[in-house]
Length: 575
Image (cartoon, rainbow, N blue to C red; front, side, top):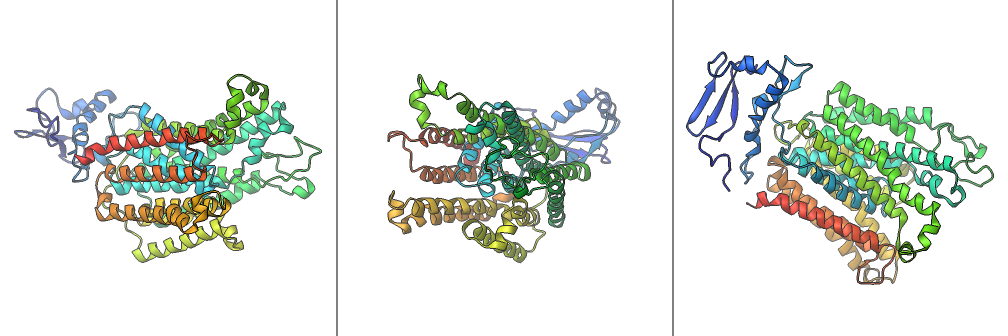
C-alpha cells in the first residue's frame, strides 16, 4: 500500500536529515526531485538559526516537520523505523532544556482508546487474578495491560524494546502481592463493623495506600522500559538489592512492633485489630506496606534523580493514582452491598443479588480503574517514549541467562506447588521473586520472550490442581487426569513456547513492535480467559446461572474487545 504522503508531488518522501555541526545550524529535506538544503545563515524566509530561537511554539512547529519521517513508515514494516541524529539533541534558548527527539510514539491515537482498552485489559486480568493468588496472579494484569498499552501508544518501538518494557511491567506487578489486604477490606464490610464509619474510612485509606503502592511499581518499571534509558544488568541487580534494603528499613519504621500475643501492633495498622473489636478473638496479619512504600519511593527517586528518567517518574505517579483510586472504588461496591442489605432484597436485585460475586466485582472494578488511569497516563506522556537504538541487548552470556532461567523456574515451581521451608521464606516475597527476572531482562534481551511463559506456568498449574484434583468427579477433566493435564497445562505451555520461538526465529524483535505484540496479545488474552473459564466451571450463559456467570460475561466482552484491538492493529502487518 503506497504511502499517502509519498503519492503527493512535492510531498516529503524521504524525511529529513540533520547536517552541519550538530547544533541544528543546517538541515536538508529529501524530496521527489532531490535534496533541498538550508545551510547555516542561508537565505529564504529567514535564517533557520534565528527562527528556532524566536519562541517555544515555533520550535514545536519545526519539530512537527519531522513527523512524516516517523509517521509514514512503510506499512510492510520490513525495516526498523529510522532514528534521526536529532534524537539526542538538546536545544537551548528556552526555559530549561527541551529534547527535540524523534519519538516512536503513535501520533494519531485518540485518548479514549488506551483508556477503554486499558480498562478492559486491567479489569479482566485483575478479576482473573483473584482465582490464582497474589504475586503470580497479579502478573497476568501486568502482561495483558502492558501488551495493550504499548501496542496502542508506542508500536514503532522495536519488538525487543517493547517486550522489555512489557516484561518489566509484568514482573513488577507481582511485587505488591506480598501485601496483605483481606482484613483491610474486612474493615469496610465485616458484619461486626457495619455501621462503624471510622473503621470504614480507615479501611478505605489503607486500600488506597496499598493499591497505590501495588500498581506504582508496575507503572514505574513500564516507564523505565519505554523512556529511552539503557539499564544494565549489574545496575538492576544493585537496584533490586537496594529495594530489598529499603523494604527492610520501611518495615522496621512503619510495620513494627508486631507481637499479637501481647496485643502489640504497629501504630499505623490497616488490618483488623483490637482497636476496632476490643473483646474479639483476632488473628492479626503481618503488614509490609511500609517496606514496600519505602522501596517504591526509592525506585522512583533513583529513576528520576539518578537516571533522569522522566517517563518512569510520571508513569509511576499515574500508576499510584490509578491504584489509589481503583482499590477503594472497587471496594465501595462491596461495602455498599454490606451496609445496605435491604436495598438488595427488593425489585430487580431480589433475583440478581444471589448471582453476584461482590468480591470479584471489587477486583474487576479495581483493575478497570487502574488500567484506565495507566492508559491515560501513557497517552499523556507518549511523546516521551524513546528508542534506545541498537540491537536486542545481549550483554549477558547465553549460558548465564539459561542457568538463571533454570534456577528461577525451579524456585517458582517449588514455591507455588510444594512446601519447602527455605524456598517459601526466600521466594514467597514479591521483590525476591522478581530479582532474577528483572536482572536477566536487562542483561539478555530475549529473556523478555520467556517472561510470558513464566507467567502462564503457575496459572495453568493451579487450574490443573483445581479442575483435576479439587473437583474430583465434577467434570470430564477430573475423570481423565491425563486429558486435564494435556488441555490445561501441556498444550498452553507448548503453544506459549512455540510462539516465543517463532517470534525470535522470524527476527521480529528487531522490527516494529506491532509484529510481536499483536500475536502475543491475542494468544495470552484468550489463554488466560479460557483457563479462568475452566476455573469458573464453564459458566455458559445458556446454562443455569451461578455466581460466576455475570463476571464471565463481562470477561467475554473484554476478551472480544482486546481481540478486536489486536486484529485492527494487525491489518498493517498483513498488508
